[in-house]
Length: 469
Image (tube, rainbow, N blue to C red; front, side, top):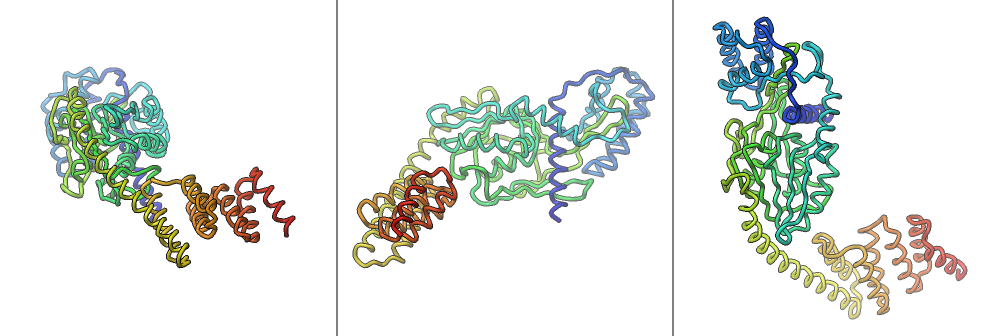
């Protein structure tokens, strides 16, 4: 079952990647066409549509329409391949209202009809195209104080774009409001849509599903519980759209809108929700057939043919200026609320540590004290208020005041929180040594050297302790 699910995701990843490459490819005219080629195209594309198109009943109507047009001689006078492809696309879309369905003239480097497409080459070409635009991450900055801005021009395959996504999200995570600009986003991989969306949802949330007719299978895209950086579930989020925002770009916007996670500003998007793939038809013509459809868990439908309608409609070129005022207001409110909350957390952390110290001084209730220390430092780490160095500093405060047991308790917490840090074990060893517990001091100095063979202090202390034994 796991391999089946993996293959299903790879299938949709390839579909979406190919779709994006269509928008980037330069279409080069490759020869002329004649009546024989037209007849061949109508016959073969009809068979493909009936077999592959996600809506079989609509496929039958499209096939009937283009065959009737061909019998009437509507296409007889076409000799230019590009002109024929444009008109045929228009005729098919007049029935399907499906903006993904398009006829293309093959690039001069494309294969002849009948040859089996090479998925590896498609993936390589797609990744190369995304590389030229920095895998879609074309601009990242802070504007108007601390408003994070990301211009995202495409959703590259996750396996090549994940590191870029994590770096971008890390930069945005220090913001007080975030703007993601999709105005030039033509689409791409649903896996990357899922991954970036995951940064803005605390708990797993069903975002979208994709049904595929060919495999008769449905892939469900749920926000991930873990990502490669800090999540931003509460940060004010704004998404900019235009009429050129398409496919996976629309999916991201629709996910955010339907989950009421952010505000969309700009123009109604292009209206392409049905993923698919390219099929060779004749020597110089090919067709993109949507073999799947998006199904939103909330609306039970998608944006095909109608686009994603923004919450605040404005011309695309004015969207950024329009959203800045809203973002500034939201950022101020967010910062005020967050500052108040963090100050309350700091007071709570200090209070628990003080209570733990009091227990040591008065009653020696180490179990309760240990629980308080853990609660305080767990809260500090969760809210990013403390780190390894702060906890180490706190431990040394207690060590210098000769509260050895409390210092050991804090240093032990640090070794559990940061088990790969030699410094945490070095500090714990020193606390044991100060207390006179040489046995545990030796154990922890050895652990420090194991993690950092160049730890000079630990080596010197071990020699000293062993000489005293």
